[in-house]
Image (cartoon, rainbow, N blue to C red):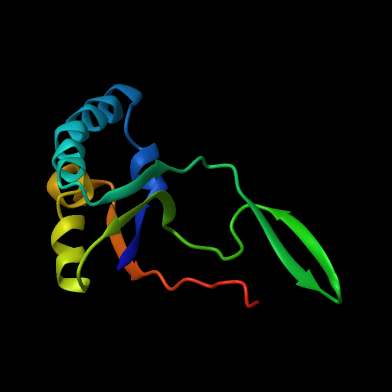
Length: 124
């Protein structure tokens, strides 16, 4: 089964740090990402840009707004998809991610959310 892993951060905590501090932490991430990738279970891993558009149907028309639809103190910063037998293995694999391995994760409000992926298919 495939699992979507969503990585969140607290932008206020991240913005309070200097670029140099952030760069040091980001460089510390790579060995942990390598361990995750070496599992052979990572299908895709991507960081997300801050630019966001939200589409919503209102009164029969699609509207487009800048930014996330809901106000939140957390920001979605990364996503990755893994293959695992079950949720237990998905948690074990996701725990290799820098979000949970680095002390900075606590300082920056990092957290991961794991969701099973259910596929929608075109009906013939």
